[in-house]
Image (cartoon, rainbow, N blue to C red; front, side, top):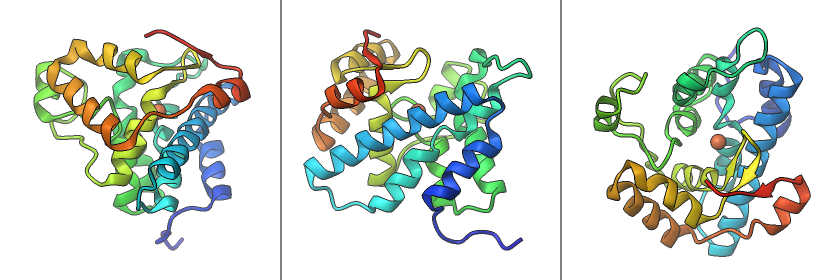
Length: 203
Ligand SMILES: [Fe+2]
């Protein structure tokens, strides 16, 4: 099969989720979260009038968590201990599917506000020692939009709630989040919370 050279269509993205989801429940949790993150990214793009590649943002947002499927066991239980690996696992999936590196990177470079090789070493994370940093504006927007919703349990979080959570990883992480917040602004989560029936929670 000839590897795809362009971004996947919406139908192809849904087919990828269906292919890798081990259960209907996992598919629902991950795909719904990805759609919510995509909606948040689109809202931020529109309100800040950011000159970004909107198709790339959408595809990246809709696929950023596809690696989570590889962390479910046969009984549909999620491996929380290795959850941080979902980024590199997703990067692997998209690479195996033949998608370009610029799309694969949305998976490996969206965790927290970016992971450095120092973080991997200092926190003894189960990842190859490397930097996993959102570089392009599109990658940074998807990483940022991801911070406003959580899959498990399904909840929306404000920017203040995430800032409080990330503080335990150091002042540098709070500063990095503040830079993103100033650049992209804060989304209005009210409509999405009502649409999906997910509460706004505390972290
Ligand atoms: Fe996510």
